[in-house]
Amino acid sequence: MLEIHFGKTENARRRIPMSNRVASVLDMQRTLSQSEWIFPAPTKSGHMEKSTLKKRHAKACKGKSKDDKNTGQKSFDIQPFALYTLRHTCLTRWAPHMDPWTLAYLAGHRDMSITKRYVHPQQETIRKAMERVSGHNLSTPLQLEAGTESVEPQVID
Image 1 (spheres, rainbow, N blue to C red):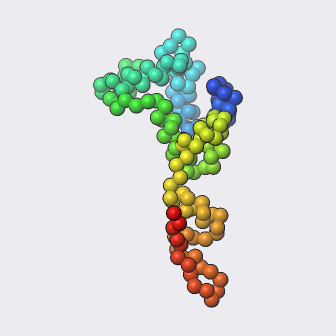
Image 2: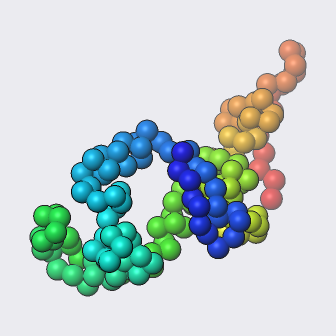
Image 3: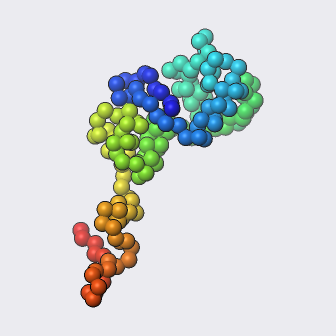
């Protein structure tokens, strides 16, 4: 479980299950880190301050391809984007796979009006939902009781 202890609201403080992949990455990082922090930063405290990620993001957006002296990894130019885009993309990609209340919990939203910004129902998602509640395959004609004709699905605007 990932525990989030701080946030703007009480809803922002929550427990989120981790996938095996995330747990493995964190374990690997913990093993590689020579600091008490999983993701250490070159700050006085040794951990990422509020500005750490913003500074690294700005540097990445204007930097040239080069080797990082501290990590030995290459960094490359990337097109500038707002950091919040990463969160928005994640929540938008999760939305079709869970109910809106679970999405709101994972996002730390206190109000469903915020969560609905991320829910963009697609025709396929709507069709599958209707199939679950109706018990019928809507991609083929509906079969009525024995001795009656089949009915083609109709689109009603």
